[in-house]
Image 1: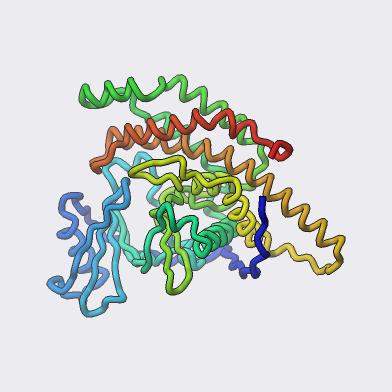
Image 2: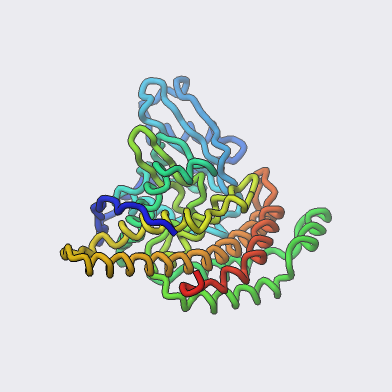
Length: 380
């Protein structure tokens, strides 16, 4: 597997014991089918000088969890407000108080947009200029190192004393399994569910296997995004930066899960194609960039050839170890979002085939399970 030239070290801000600035809370509910009317009421509070006739609205359709509306004011085109209305019953899946805390925490660290306000079923926050990644740009040699470095910086962040430090993946999967529907409204949907999805007892067995296999891999527990699909990465070509958005699931978790989840998302969401899962060669390059930033505090002051050889050997071993962990945790990503999709299939009002998505993720999980679980550093 090839190695790239070592990149320049990136300074890593540490975020500890910070004071989070509270966003305005507006006691109103925005109806999903009345986004503009509700958004105007939010803007009346956070942008009171805006004249509503001069505000242009754009509905963003990339997400499958929430409704998102961009608010553009003609007199100040650089000040764009995004208003996100939570999807129906998503409070079953997401701790909204933790989400608000995460956005404020990460904004103060320089990693997330500014949060302007919360309301009863959503929030308003800063628009980040740029374009979301797609299945081509996520592999671009000018882009993927930015993503790898930003993830490493986030993983080095200290979330403070108020954020639980236990890995969240097992609690989250168990939470989803506990509320997973086994009977759906409508005979057709129920028939598809029974045809496509294994019995809950089988899924619980798979969860036990995954937990036993992956808990002992030694992956560090770090502050993770946990949902870094391509639409949650904004690339600004002019500034040569990336910004992560949507911190609904952010928490401490296994390092390898966050990376494996991102790699699994290369396949896309609307038209899933797992032929797009990154090759071993690409992963190797990505992981090398990631580790260079993640280990920035570890410096080697020796210039001897022997020390350089030892350092290169250690780097290759570290990348190999992380590669094995990442691909094993990609299985946990498939499993988590499959169960998530089953819950969404019952409750979401968004026009998306959640049952079909659950089927695709579970099929990929079972197709790759034996291969990924058998990976070892020695057999690479």
